[in-house]
Image (cartoon, rainbow, N blue to C red; front, side, top):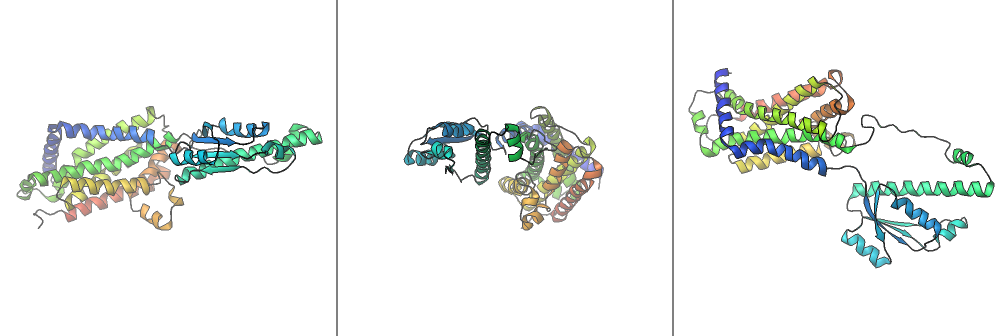
Length: 384
């Protein structure tokens, strides 16, 4: 390893980046835009589900039942429907995703102590949202049933309301949410996006930077020089590591001050893990650049090779423990899962080296492996 060669190559690459103002602007602007767009658009909470009601009863109990849905923060009331055709059309057009149908004689049957069937139609296209919305419906209905029983016992049996409440709910459940007490999705999403963007951006920038030399033919100067392969790869990588480090600081500031995410853990763990992660992502870009000749192919392969692991196998969209055994094994092959554990552990859990050193070590190991693989596959000759 020749430090003089590495320094010269890094300076040359830096001048090339600075000369292309559009490329330089995109290198800093795209990560910020991704943070803004995905940070506001990637919402995991299920709230304000658009709903409509077909109330065929109009009695006081049916109005009370419907009002519990109308006033809930989980549903967005869009109005009253009349008739099966109107209900079907509203769901087909996508005007609503949930329709509550109250049959005739609902209030009368409840007043007589009989059961009163109610139908709910939920749009099942969005399976996760449909399951969550179904849970909301069941919870609101269970609360209504409990209030009806309590009211009946108070009026018919003359029991004190407090005693009835104790008898109906003998178990007092207290739920505490740890690490994100307010259940703000942006507290989890914003740090998670740092993991995703810091996997995609360094890999893409590095891959395009090397392949650009292949397309322009300037890489033949390297083929004819006495610069070794390792010096060339490191010299090409370092400027993009510097750009990515600046982007990391900007994205971290956005997570803290724009999205309000807390930072409870060790800054040194976060810094070391993030730097190793940037080298790992840059190594992916180098590996792709070794295998392809065009910037279009490099961009496509790099995006697919980083976006899919970043979204699907990191734990950002679904906990790793909820995946199939095969998917869990695949998740361990990518650094995204380990970096997300570090990011969430530092931002939300307040963890430090004592908890996160295995993840940091695995990220470093991945960086060494992928950079070594790029070095092994890179040759100072033209591929036939």
